[in-house]
Length: 212
Image (spheres, rainbow, N blue to C red):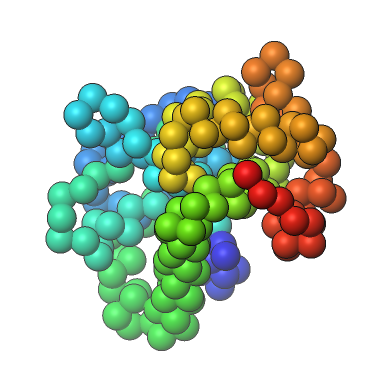
């Protein structure tokens, strides 16, 4: 669930930052701001022991940098623009003061964060239930709604997909093969694209039974 138009209007006059495709912005370089995505797509990841671990794919209406406000741990994320992206820069102090003084804004942000938490819980539940393929379907649907093409390798690597859905790269290939056989996706020349949106929707809604 993206943030409301009310929140957009609150910050419409604030300064903006534009990121070119593949440009990276690191949270520890910008701790004084929270960022609202106006347009574009951002890959959020953290770096640990020389490897990048992807956390989420964010798009229009998502908020970046909330950890500066709510987390006492020094866990910093990096943001890479998958497509040209425009962000509104909101000073952390301003954002924090609005949360304390503006009830409508606070309720809207609580709903937004609750929705994001629900998404994470569902991902974990599917992993625990050995249904990483269902996380894969949800990820495909999300990226297809963003109108992104060549999901692998242009947007995500197979390791990125594995990190997001909670499995290994080898199992990702198994899932890709399964859904390619069902004519839901194409993986020609190792480029992953959705080719049957209606089938994708039906699988997502459990109207078509799938087993791996």
